[in-house]
Image (cartoon, rainbow, N blue to C red):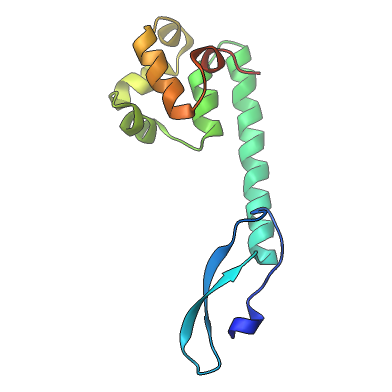
Length: 130
């Protein structure tokens, strides 16, 4: 596609621009900024709908004490056990264990602060989800 034809369909990214490759008037590939592209915007919208539905389901499980608030924050931040383990420096088996309310409620202040720092929330916000 030529540089002048790079799509500029405003979408989910807002003011963020994506780098695409297009050809200039000499036929050379150059980087070009794009505000978005309708098919990409549709796919991203569908993906976020799914993520939000999943997040609502996890929130219900947290409220029913089937999962700890940690599960909510992990999902909200698109993290899995392995990734959160790497960010906190805690073993994956410990992170997985902390997804259970009983284990989460026994966490000391240091562990709670590690999780809170990763999610950029206070310890109180980590414990209470709504």
